[in-house]
Length: 306
Image (tube, rainbow, N blue to C red; front, top):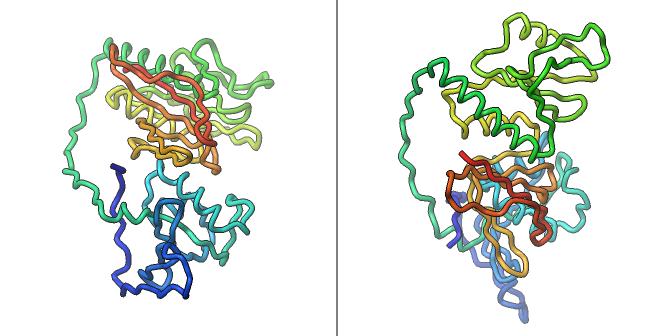
C-alpha cells in the first residue's frame, strides 16, 4: 500500500469526455476542472494540470508548495513530467509564462487519506550540568564528524583555525571547542555549541566581509539532542533540498522499489543524486552503507548510531 497525502482538488464539475470513434479506452480523459485531467501513464492513471510558470518558481517548489507532494515522490513525478513535456530540454531552466503539463498524483492515491496526527506538546528539557554537557558536546561532535565525512565535506576539530587562510593577520579560533566544517574552499560553518564561542570572537567573525569567503556560525544546544542537531547541520550544508522523516522514496522502473530513511538529502535540482540518512539504535540491525545505483538514481546510504 502506498503512503500518500490527501490533496483536495477544486470542487468543480466532473465530465467524461467522449473518445473519438476507434480511440482506445485508456485515452479517455476525465475533466476535473478546466486545467486538471486524468491521463494514463504505463499501467497507472495520473492527475495532470496544465500550469503557467510564475516568476521565481522552479519545479521543486511547485511540487512542494502547489501540490504538497512528499520529497520521496517528487523524482517519480518529474520523470513523468519529462515525458509529458518533451519539448523542455532542461527542467532546471523554466521561465515565467511557460506552460507545462504537471503530473502530481496517481488516481488510486486519491482514495487514500493520510491518518490524522495528534499534536504533541513538547516541553523544553532542563539545562545540562557542566560535566554532562561536555560529554554530550564530545558525542555530538563525533557524530557530526562522521556525518560530515560521509557527505564528502571536511571537519576540523583541533588546533587554531585561521579563518582567512594566507593572511598573517587572520583571526583564529580554537577548533577543539568550536569545530569548523568546510563546505568548500570558500564556504565554512563554525559550530558554536552552547554559546561556547567567546563574544569578541563572534563579533570578529560576523564582521568579516569578503567576496571570497562565506563564514556561517551555527548555534547548537546540548539539550536539542542528536536528531535535532543533525537536522540543523544538514540544513546549513546548502544542499538543494533536505526532507526530515519523509514518506518512503518510491522509485518506479522495471520494478517498484521503496526506500525508507530519516532524511532524504537531494544534492542538486536533478533530484537523482540522493543521500539517505538513518539514526539507528546501538545493537539494532542496520542497512548496509555505501553507494547504490537504483534505476537511474545514485543513492548513498549513511547510518549514524545514536
